[in-house]
Length: 408
Image 1 (spheres, rainbow, N blue to C red):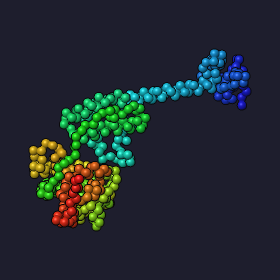
Image 2: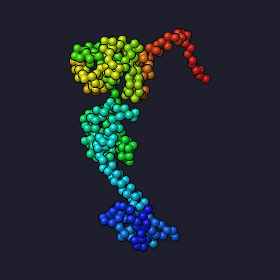
Image 3: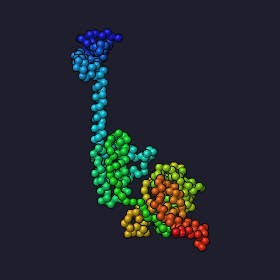
Image 4: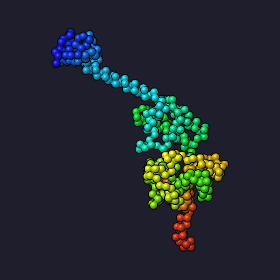
């Protein structure tokens, strides 16, 4: 270890045994002084790092003046700690300012994009394309360029007004506001926003956007027959939904591993409700699978032309509906026939046939019984029949004892 050499009062240095700074050996400077009667020595650094005797004297003098005035750091250790904390606070403030400047769109398309595209279980969401459409068409034009801290309820009211003016359904407006709420919640979760979610201060539009139309047996037979003349494959997809109650996405997602014809069961994975469930085959559905060449377990049963998962129903379905004039003169979209009407028809037929509503709930894979309760009015004839059966077991009218309260 090199020996220490006194430079001036309270400052000393030692020379590096081999390293040069210029033509002279590199020097390591230190200062020493007394604090509360104790000798304190603290290292500063090397001449090659910019330290000089004058700088060392300056630091020592500054600390001595602080001790004399009882203000500021009294030792180099305190001075270093205070600077480190000041740098940390400065960096933290800069980070907060940078986050505050990020716009709604930059967040949704950047740090939050992965979270938006997966559900709470980390699975890829099937509605990503739909949500992106809502973002591009309704959300970004109004709040996309605003930092989250500047998005206010008035902006969300404007989105509502724009969608209402375009005659978008209340449920669509609910969906758009739900996307905005979700992005704010994610921003809070990722420490990108610390305010109040503005969606909480917005009144959601009223109205029931649920589909009401279901097909009669005659209408359903005619529709399936018409579709089959245009596209047998689309006709098969329609039959699958009508006879099993599956959503279009559930039909598209079927792989051969999910098909058990012997038991008459289809296994539906990662459904809209977030859980797996079974769908049960009618004889017509069993025949569909028997007539198709079985593929590998991982292959889709109803792939698109490239062998990949089908993503949407072709316009063949709409052409058949138009040809049969099923929507002619009907302005209320809830009463119009769409592909989803097949699932609705499946449930309605079940209820009319006396199937218990709780069984229908399980067949449809509803997460909430309220969703199934919309079909309850269709079971009135079943309830009347049940009442008549009960009535037939009661006493004959002539033997019924009527209890009359006597007066007095």
